[in-house]
Image 1 (cartoon, rainbow, N blue to C red):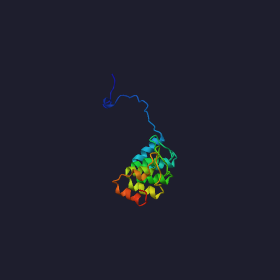
Image 2: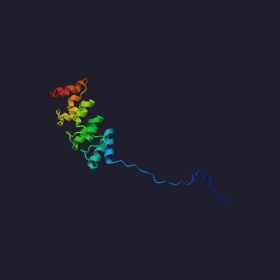
Image 3: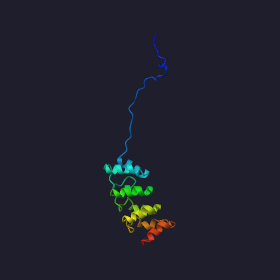
Image 4: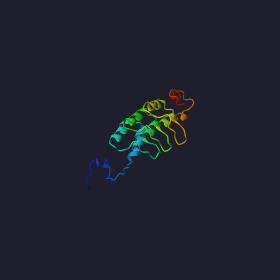
Length: 151
């Protein structure tokens, strides 16, 4: 006769533990994700730990600064510039960060890029300067370029 304690009927039978799988993504992919999410702390950590290079063109065809502009995150753009992102770097289509800011209507980012020396006369692969990409109804962004004589 076996002796069972009162708790034995509540104890789960032993379970065989299988090793868990972990998925690891390349640093560049994780870094881009942090940029898109606006996680400035992680973006800074990746840069300081030299896990990424700011001039890398990712599979998206863009560099980190382009990704930050597209996300509309001015603080991320400033952080990348602080760590040496090239304001004149072109993506795979010849677009600069300023082209992207104009195309997407990010007036504050465009203003910042211009204050940091972004060129208004850079031509992309389609022959367009940043001002060519401004929505005609975007009065603020258009005025920013008109004040510089770039429209």
